[in-house]
Amino acid sequence: MYITKKAHTPSPLPSTSSFEKWQRPPPEWIKINTDAAIIKGVGTRLGWVARDCERKVLVAGVQRRRSKKSLEPAKGVALRWALGYASLNTWEWVIIESDALGWISRLQCGRKVKLNRI
Image 1 (cartoon, helix red, strand yellow):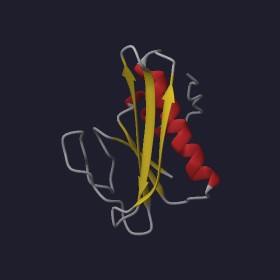
Image 2: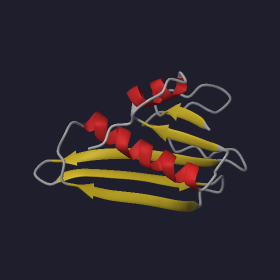
Image 3: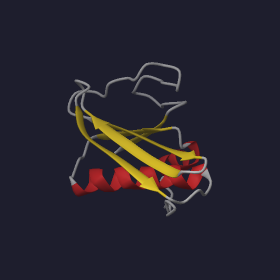
């Protein structure tokens, strides 16, 4: 599994930022993008989408939560949810792209990470 930050992507994949157009993954790879948002007075929203190299959406997930905790734990939950789905489906060639830079940095270092529950 290849995990990337949205703001910076190590080689061999092209660099992307939140202001650039989505970059398709190499052939036979799946790219998963994750995100979360807290909507004032409403709650937390989590989401992720998996696409192939032809930009075809393979699967996506959206959840509503009542919790209104900080955004970083919510981004961790969205990331965990997407990674869990990829693992259950035995996807071997996966690129994770997210703006959850703290979580991504920890995963790239190979450290064990407890992705928070909200």
